[in-house]
Length: 144
Image (cartoon, rainbow, N blue to C red; front, side):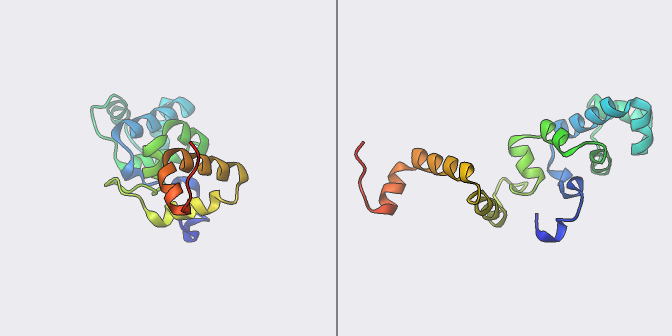
């Protein structure tokens, strides 16, 4: 997410089209748990029959309904529902075709380098997974 949309609420930054049917259903289920069946129908502007069909997988949940539903969740509730690659797709780091948005990934790495603990985790990860590449890059040999 660019600086241009930094002032937007978190839920407007989510690419709901990147969410799977199952994740969209879980979002709707969580909103129903919080608000109750009748209030959910009311705030989302859908019929009870539609909500029932969405929740039971009979009908695909329209993106607009999910986008509206996100307003009734906190960002942490959303992150409990959506994790891993689905979260990375929803926030735009991983594109729908599975490729990585290098610009966003590099911004994230740059930010991570300012956090001492995260920087150490990254260094350990790089050394453990790419030991030979690190040795070649440094032009040295480590005793193993």
